[in-house]
Each structure stands twice: as C-alpha cells, then as structure tokens.
Amino acid sequence: MGRLVTPRGLRSAAIAAGLLLGALPALAQISPGPLSRAHAKLEGSGQCASCHEPRRGVAPEKCLDCHRALGERIGAGRGLHARPEYRDCKTCHVEHQGTEFELVWWGKAGREAFDHRQTGYPLEGRHARLVCQDCHQPRLNRQREDLATAGVDLTRTYLGLGTACTGCHADEHRGQFGDRECTSCHGQSHWRPAPGFDHAKTSWPLSGRHTAVACAKCHKDSGADATGRYVQFKGVSGRECASCHEDVHRARLGTACASCHSTADWRRVERARFDHDRTGYPLEGRHADVACDRCHQRGAARPLRHEHCTDCHADAHFGQLASRADEGACESCHTVAGFSPARYGLDEHQKTRYPLSGAHAAIACNACHTTMGVAELRQAGAVSASAPASGKSARFRFASTRCADCHRDAHFGELDRWVTQGGCESCHSVESWRAAGKTFDHARTRFALVGGHATPACADCHEKVDVGTEGERVRFAGVPQTCEGCHQDTHRGQFAVSGKTASCDRCHDPETLKASRFDHAHDSAWPLDGAHARVACAECHRHETRNGADFVRYKPLPKTCGGCHAGSRFREKAAPSR
Image (spheres, rainbow, N blue to C red):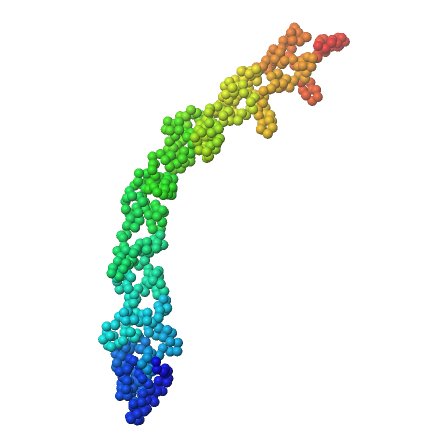
C-alpha cells in the first residue's frame, strides 16, 4: 500500500497542486502520488482536470459526473451523502494514496466504529452486532442490476440495500401477511417472540385460556415450498372447538361447545348458557346449585345412572328403612329442595306400627329419632353388620315401643310390678304424664281410696323424696296405711291403749269421717239412757286447750250426776271419773 495521507494533508497537497497548475502550466505534470485502483484510468497529469478545478481543488460535481447513482441519491436527499457534512467528497475519500488504498477514510477508529444512524437506518438489536459485509454484499443488493449497468463495483459499494426486512431476509411466512412490515410484529433483537403482534387485531381474538397457549400449539410447521418448511398462520383449522379439541362428549351434546363452555376454563361450565332441562334429568331444588363436576366427573360425560337417589347419594340411614314397602325410597320423605326438614309428617307416621297420639304427636321428630353413630346403631340392633364402619344417622328402627325404651324410669324401679303387668299405661296415658291418678285404679292396691280419701290429690300422700345425684322421685312404696301414719291424732291420745292409738275406723266412717260407727252403749263405759240419749255430744264433750292445741275432751269425764249437774247433793259424793 502507498503511504497514508490524512484528509488535512490531502487538502494541503491539493491546494499546492492547484496553485501550481494555475500559475505554472508547465508544472502540471506534478502529482501528489499514485491514484487508487478505482481511479487508475485517470492516472497522468493530463487527467487532473477530470477531478480538479483551478484554484478550487477537487470539485464534488466532477465526482458525481462519474458516480451518477450516488448523485441521484444526493439529489433525492437520501442517504449519508445527502447530509451537509458529507457533501465534500474529499472529506472521506482521500486520493493519491496508491493502488492498494481503499479510498475511504473511516476515521481513526476504523470502519466498525462508523455511526450507522447517519445513513438514516440505525442498527439496533442483533443488527448492531453484524459486520458491514454481512449486509453489504452483492447478493443482497436490490439495485445490483442497475448499479452494475452504471459501472458500480458491487463488491465495494454500500449503495443498493433496502430497509425492508425482506431485502435481506427470506419471508418466513411466505406472503401470508401480504405487504405488512415485519417490524409490525417482530423486533430486531429476536425473531421470537413477536412483541408487536396483537392477536386481538386478527379475525380470531384470543380470550380466556387461549391467551396462554403457545403459538406453536395452533400454528404448526405445516407448510412447505421450494425454500423449505414454514409455519402456517393463514388458513388454520376452523373456528369450531372440535377442529382443535377432542369432543369429550362424543357428539352426544352437539357441536356448539360455546353453549355450555367458555374459553375462561373448560371445566367451568357457563350454567346460564346450558339448559339442563334439555337432558334426561332436569335440575331442580338444591341440585341446581351443585357444581357440575360433582356429578359429571372426569372421564364421564354424564352419570351412569340417575333413576334413584342412591345412584349418586349414599344411604344416609344405613338401610334402616329398606324393609318399607317402598324399599326406603328417599323421595318418600325428602325432596330435592333439601334433605331436611323431611316431608314425612304426622299422617305418614300414623300408618306405622306406632301411631302418634296425645302428647307424642307434639314432640319433635329428633326427640325420638336421635342421631347416633354407626357403632351405637349397630349395638342397638338398628343397622346390620354390613353398615359402613363410620358415620352417623338418625335412629328409625326400635326393638319395641315400650315407654321404658325411650323414657327414663321416674320411679327408680319402685313400681316395676305394675309396669311388668300393664306397662306405664297402668297409671299414665300419652295425653299427659301428670294425669296418672285419673287412670290408675287405687283399689288394686292394699289401700283402696274411699270416702274422703278419694278426693285429695295424689301428691298429698305421695310426696317427692330426694334420691341424691339423680334428683327427686315420687314416693309410692312405704306410704303409711294407718290413719295415724298420715293424720294427726286430734284426740291427743285419749283413746290410746298401752300407748297405741286404736284404729280410727272403729268410730269414724271413711266416707264422711264422722264418728257414725261409735256406739255409746257398747264402745264406752257410759251408756246413754233416758234423757241422756237426747243430749248433744258437745254438752258433755267440750273443747279444751292443751299446750296451745284445741281438742275435744272425751276422756276422762265424771260418771256421777254431780260430776256434770249442778247441786250440792251431787257434789257431796263425787263419783269416780269415767
């Protein structure tokens, strides 16, 4: 290569040459150095005027006389050379440096430091990492024929490249997007993904779960031409769901998937869209609120059977009602509106082995049909051994309907002999527990109630007694059967014999409690004769008070006339008391 002369040195040499050419034509043969290979045909002192003008030096206009293609771009205001700072050709193109000189001054940092933005096409992304010759090569030159005709060396020129992506790159889409610019979808850093592409602007906007699907799931490598295979974007399978997705319903529900499903989630059926009444099982009551997948489980388009509740639901009663005439059909008691409360009412209960009457008719169902664990139900004989190992249910099967099977013995076994004979009904009725006295025949006991004894309330004799931690009970056994056992001795022991009061019924009638059975002639030591028989009892048996208690005096009384009648002769000889 020839020696390198800087643009400043070139300008100095050109000026000197111009002065010599203008002042001393005889010295025009003088040259600063040999021309480059591209301008070798202009070598010789006779060709200086092809580029130089007297007193001006190198004239850009003369350069453009040969470089017409460049002149057209400058005239159109396009490209690097149209910029004012590049109008003077000798700024960058330094001649007379010898045949090996490339004729371009790139600056001290060299060609790779050139700011490509000055050309009007900034290099960004992966383009910024390319070297000049990666793009500026004859095969990529879009104007190579015109430039070759104009005499431009295609191996050296930087003209002729377009700014469209397809000027350098093959159309990976094979014209599927027409004349749209690649940059409308793709960036310069990577071909994939295409950040500028908006599927919402296409004829098939993506929504719901479709937005997260990888492009290749729908746009597959399915096309091919002479240059190889390519991804198909236009003419993809139809918009029907079945064109991409397998019909899990096997066409049983038609092809309009959107009538039930949405792109938000395949498993979340839009219930407002789907009319279940069109199926063989319209949804009513609580069924209308059940999530679809509770019945339509994965792998099954619909339940296998739905004729009976137990096709889907476990028997909540563990077979306790299977012996019924309807074999325990759930709909006999329950509705789809809710499992509880049941529609099984009093009328239905009256048809069972235990019709409800009296107070039983007003008792809540769960008071008798209590909830129990399976183990308890099995122990009570309500369920069979085949019942589930765990769970709870109300009890419906009972070994008997005896009162004692449901009610606690309020008498603590005291009346077992009566219960054994006639059950609790011996005294009580289902109308009222407390109305026992109205049904019980007290004459069956050792103490028949007669006379005044028939009117007192039961509780007057049968009092409550404390039984400790178990509370209270009414006392029946051990109740006194003698008068003095219940009644106070109003005679204050006047009729006691050897410290024991005689039986009251010797004198008193139980019906009236009057002493109608008392015979003064036989039961006393003072028979009433004559005028005595007409005397009122109170005339002899008068009221007295002892220790603050009032009573009638019967014994002892005087047995002589003077003991009762006034007169000295009666009082002189007092008879002994009777």
